[in-house]
Image (cartoon, rainbow, N blue to C red; front, side, top):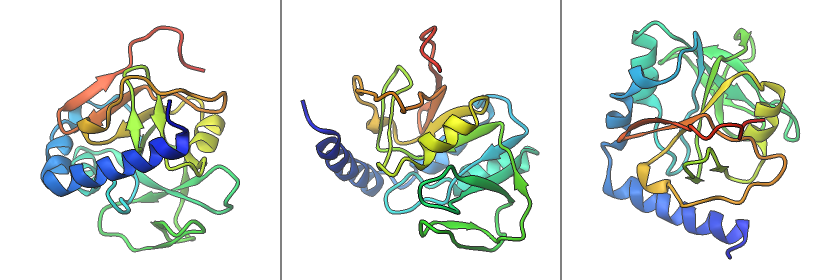
Length: 187
């Protein structure tokens, strides 16, 4: 069995290939925005590297009347905060080097958090980049609905999770939204 480090490396390479061969995937995924779970305030992210771009999804959700926000890393070993944001508003780099809303922007609590990932499984497992930002944030916001945003090709058979890993409630890909239906797996 591959280590998490090896799995992350192979999944980064796979995601890069998926991004190179399908530059319309993000648009198709955004076409399924209405299938996402309810939530007045939705956290998205600004794609970095080969992450599935959330711009089209942001536009779709914004046009449908949902309030948007983006994560902000204030401290590298702490949970992220979220600041209100709308497409086109200015951004600056946060403590982790990710584009984030400006410091004077209102801090909000999302009902629904869309997260990038390297791999996911049908049981709500998520393999992230390894920094722990989302897991720490999910732990302090246990009532927020957690949804992966990824290429369908990033699905794996089963991920081995550690005690701190928080499962997703569903995944949105270019093929649609799928909720995780296994009973009793969430904590």
